[in-house]
Length: 107
Image 1 (spheres, rainbow, N blue to C red):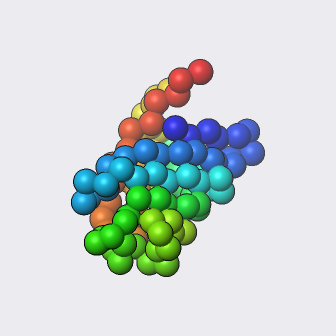
Image 2 (tube, one colour):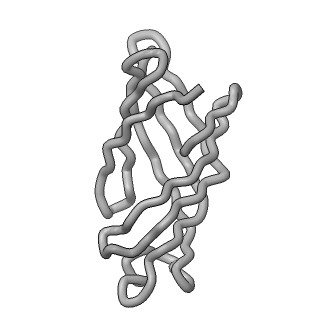
């Protein structure tokens, strides 16, 4: 779930199972979205920052600064608007990989 304010401020929560089968969450109260102009009018860039939970022993060393399953996290993303209600984006997950995300407005 993600909420974007009229000023571009982002906040959200993602619940998932990590690569090691552990229930995990990413809570991000800080973030922003910037839209392109001109030739890049349908494109955007995003950043978010918050807390990552769920990487517990024996995989706690897989994320930096992990303390009892909690660690700081930040994600950068680039994307494109497909329609007024839908967009796609690619999230850069540090050196761990990429994630394709599809966004659909629920209002």
